[in-house]
Length: 178
Image (tube, rainbow, N blue to C red; front, side):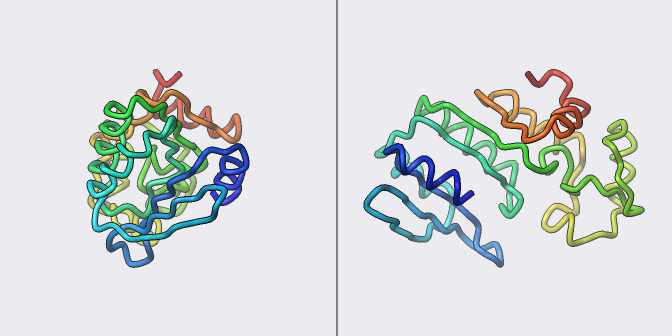
């Protein structure tokens, strides 16, 4: 978020923010430091690797991946950066996208699901008619979805929960998360 970026810059830590622009083509990148902001575009996350190797960030902070067109590939790239850079990894859990592509946890009947058994989820996603919630992920299979996200969440140095109720719901999907 803009507030987090401002807080980091105020402490002297530069921030590299990566976003997918509306329409989902390429990436917009902004480098923030005390001198200001530099913005540029990148065709893919792989183009950021040389810049990250040069900057050697101490922390990778994943705010959200909702707009990224290939979430599993982005997760793999983030983990590769974490390993190659020796950076810590923080994941913000401010919605339920890592639990389900329907990030508000509304099921195919438009009711809050409460994170039922994965077998129930497997029956829900193919029947989900709320396209604006599923966006690019309407063909996601819940077992693979959670396996991909589990890699990120379990390897994170810190997962930030903004409420106890969010933490409880995440633990339903990822019981070994600590």
